[in-house]
Length: 149
Image 1 (cartoon, helix red, strand yellow):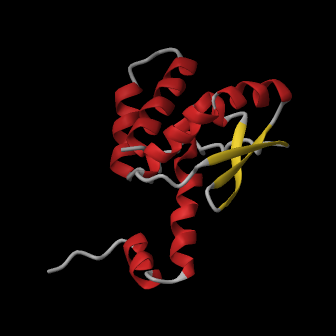
Image 2 (image 1 turned 180 degrees about the vertical axis):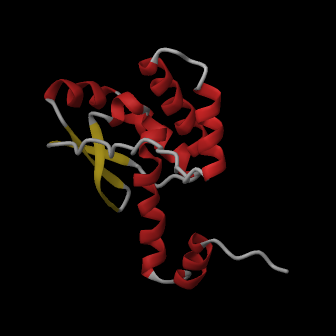
């Protein structure tokens, strides 16, 4: 049985030979930017446009713009290396606001409902604890542990 094809492969095949195929490759610049330039630079500079080999990068401050001006050739080489082909020939920098990176939501484990048997077992396990506050805390901990399994 054949494995399902990746959506990117289907799009590439569908758009092959059309002007949109070129745009598909150009869009990869945004996908590789952070990896190519590193987290520190990416937090101050993000690609905003691409046209005929010139990548426009929005930079959040004048000092960063000056520093990145000195690093243009290196940035071009790194981005092209990540892309696997020479797409970016020049970088034009402009001042602007950088959108903060999207915050990843912390993984919250799914909890399941405890059976009556499990609840009884927990109560029996903690019954020998004489301090009621400590017993309650321990019961809660055991319940949370079992709910997350």
